[in-house]
Amino acid sequence: MTTSPERHSSPAGVRVAVISGSVRKDRLGPTIAGWVAAALDRPIEVDLIDVADVALPDDSLLYPGGGAQSEVADRIAAADAFVFVTPEYNHSYPASLKRLIDWHYGEWRLKPATIVAYGVQGGHAAIEHLRGVLAELSVVTTRRALGLRAPWASLDDQGRYAPDAELSRGLTASLTELRWWAEVLADARRDRPLTI
Image: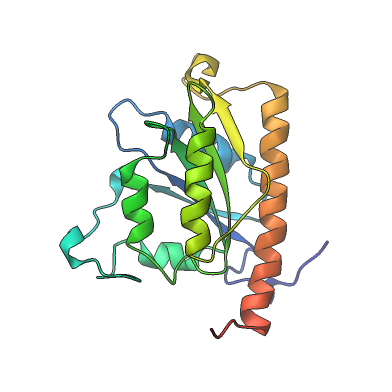
């Protein structure tokens, strides 16, 4: 399927924000996010957002539907789609990712997201918890999400994530679905804006 450049906010096509959601010292999130970013086909434009590098305003300034503008609000707004890379902590996703989500509202609306979660058991509880929060923000989550069981056991000599071919195919399928939704929803936001 070919698309004309004017269909999307980015002249290169679809812009995907890959969001790494953990702030722990020895986290694997940036490594997994790098793997995801490398798998995105060009001309997709990738914006890597590491929550650990984002200074959000004080939560006392937050009110329902938004708050003070954050330093990454424009980057989130410019994205046509999102990949949330999250560990599973205590059967859910981390508070650092929830804060980033809560500090934005309209920036997420009517855009698609896929979730790549990881943990001892594959991060599936984090995926399901995150889906409910994203639905409240009118984010369309892809059917395909990816749960990575103990990915720290699949690092190569340079510390890069090097999973088996089946997981790589799973990521490709998830990203293909994400791109389809990104193109469809970009057209819909432009041609048939939701007014409720």
